[in-house]
Length: 273
Ligand code: BTN
Image 1 (cartoon, helix red, strand yellow):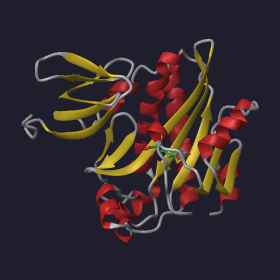
Image 2 (cartoon, protein in one colour; image 1 turned 180 degrees about the horizontal axis):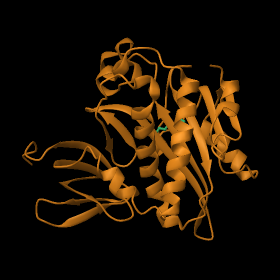
Image 3 (tube, helix red, strand yellow; image 1 turned 30 degrees about the vertical axis):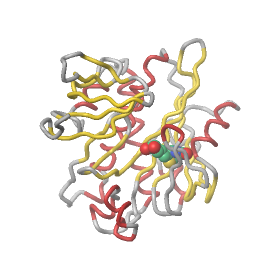
Image 4 (cartoon, helix red, strand yellow; image 1 turned 90 degrees about the horizontal axis):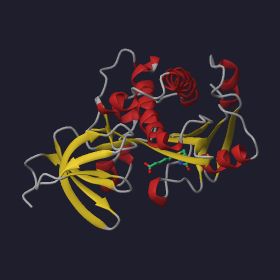
């Protein structure tokens, strides 16, 4: 299917209208933030075959081979209090996982176990399948613009990458075999996204944290956390009601990760220090 067919094939009323596709651009998140600043409506989607300056979390670059993977951003204007920001990252992960596992092309395949690494990674085993970057603007303490950017490894065969990268990433083609039609996946994804978004919004984002936790890769793990240049260790204790990760140090103190990130997660007896 061609990308130009996506919009009129969509069974959505908001997401994917309009669906803007570019062969190449700097960053889908960047372009959509610009459009949002000029009044683009909720549901606008920007996708591309290749990003020359793809953005990852914490200012990292996001690099993906041309035409092989999902590089798509969608615009929400939730208007809810800004404290909910992290829950949208968790929601985005839940929705992407659901879209992969319900994609009709994979109906007859054994489903891989896709788990989340807080807050925004989809993993199979210890390998990264997808990353999500949310960028937002706040007006009067409410989320006015929320751009959710999805980078999912689809048709990039990890065996063709360097041995180091191959140890760290996995794609849908690695998991399911045949080449996947990316426009068909986008249609399915946007339909799953729209129904989940309006469901979660209707219940004030109540179940997002619990739905994310069901598939946390961090259950029963000892974590190493990097926070503001310092390293911390502790046992995973789930998320708080806003979606922040909690852990208990070996001395028993309960702590929360606000700006930091999980850099290692092992069975609870794996660390001696
Ligand atoms: C991460 O670091 O794991 C997040 C990666 C997010 C990449 C996606 S690709 C589409 C969208 N546009 C960007 O510039 N980044 C996100």
